[in-house]
Length: 108
Image (cartoon, rainbow, N blue to C red; front, top):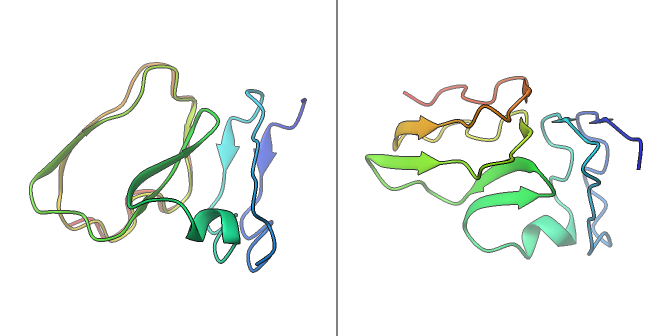
């Protein structure tokens, strides 16, 4: 508790990291924070959450996808929807206080 930010690449490449518990105090996770970890690799396709953070859309997004983020979401992580060319619309709840770097980069 008390951590508010997880910086970019913080755990990147930690292949033995199999469990992630992010406290509700976290309001920003930057890009690639959990890339190439056992935990992220084991998550199913689609939108991956950790705690109150929309971390990443995993896999190929179907065309004309409309997403509604969960009520209570505090952050959209950096690069969360990067290169999600199928994203047509997204509903962001008022609970979101941070949108990470390049969260929607190259969505078009």
